[in-house]
Image (cartoon, rainbow over all chains, first blue to last red; front, side, top):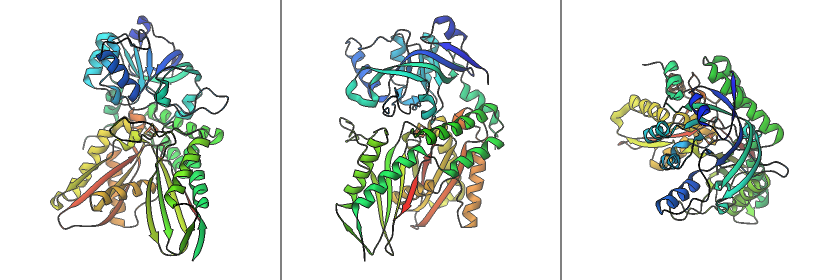
Length: 185
Length: 281
Ligand code: SF4
């Protein structure tokens, strides 16, 4: 499988060129966040308060890493299911978020917002936490430290393996590939 | 009567959780290799290959296979001729979990209250402990760090007897279609049929523990397992949900007598990172 090397954060031209089915190796920086962090970001926006991080141009990885052993930046760090972030994702895209990395399908609202805001959704393969951790060079807590594994981190990554599953036009690789192998009864 | 100190149980639980999280075990390694040969999707094959490599890496470098090192489920069978010395047995088990998750650099994923606050207990306790008393003077412990991507896709339904075998089959297929990529396929599907509402769930979890290589001893159920597995693998979901023929490694059914008014059916789904370890003391 041919892999495209992609630099993070994503620029507009790259986003538009990424198509469902592209295997990519991501290098650069991303932020992390899952259920609890999304809930806090949501409440902050609802209350018209200032966000603790900038979202413009960022890619967010839905992950709660395992603790790091001494001498390594991060423990096992594969993706968590994305649907649990669907309620908040469109609001974050309105605030400038350009990419999401997780696993599993997204709601229609998320996909509509991705098309409108020109945003791309990558899947990392679930259950590859040990392997994926090798592509994370450094990790630092940005905010919500009290949430432990659920805190928002910045990750510095090199050749982080992912696949474009939903592109900025809304093409969905899960649907395309599953249909090829589905045998109707 | 045999006297066993609860520290023995604590240490066993600790070692089992660490081992289970680092080493997926022979049966899963083997079923992944078999599936690579049978998989027709190129992308699916490459995903299976990566899963295999990830599990090798985790074992070699002693890193958690998956960052979701689960909620800690413990099945302990205690011979009725055992007398425990030391702590309350459940405290010893929880202490074993605490030490495993600390020393093994495993993720602590348990919140104290399911509804209010949801504050992390920071040591992955309490475990979910299933105790049963068996004849003899041995102790058998089986542990399962259960990830919740797949646990969240599990389900239960109380059928009327008229729903019959076809109703049960459809229910299982529907659950797997709904789970899709979220459950990190290829899955091991545990199905508990019979008993009561809660017992069917218990059976489903026991069924997952059988792993990919233990078929049901009753030929009727063995055939049913095969038939449902074939259907599941025709859904097209495939490895990681990216399309293919390997949606599940196994469908395991456990049964128990039930009431004249019902067919309770519980489905407990495990992801490909189907981790477990056991020991006899
Ligand atoms: S479903 Fe299993 S493999 Fe997937 S993220 Fe959860 S524990 Fe890991």
